[in-house]
Image 1 (cartoon, rainbow, N blue to C red):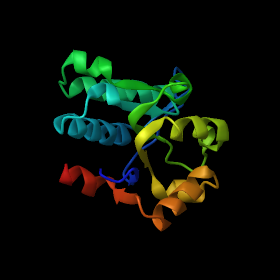
Image 2: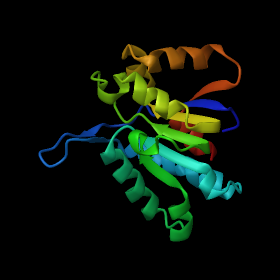
Image 3: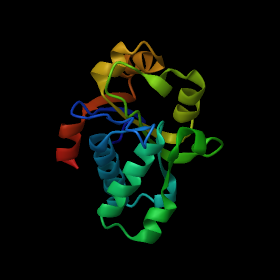
Image 4: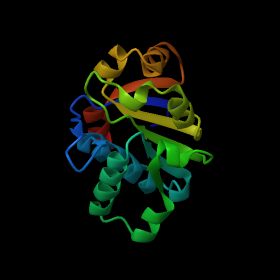
Length: 169
């Protein structure tokens, strides 16, 4: 987690959603990974107000909040961590941003919207951690395809597997 730009490949992630009462998507495995990273950062003394977790889908925001509440982190600390949709985070910044892409199928949805991607990746002052299914995002023909290539080719950027990352936290 020392790289300023880190892509976490959540290869085991599952996209759920688009049920009759829900027109949004969520990815429980990606949410678990994001919350584990947040918990690790808090254990290392990072101030909660320095951390933002953003997602393209409102159901993923709900999943993140639910998973975080189950971690039994002090409610006052949870309130200081900004968890929001990309649209809701517009105009805000944090030292560390954890971005959940959520999608695991070939249909990229919101991930094709350059404006949303621009808002999402420019919210971080110091560290941007992008969580997603690398194989799908590489083939999505979106800006994430180019981002992954950039992360592979440049110093200061890294790509890690979520299971390896989580076992090291």
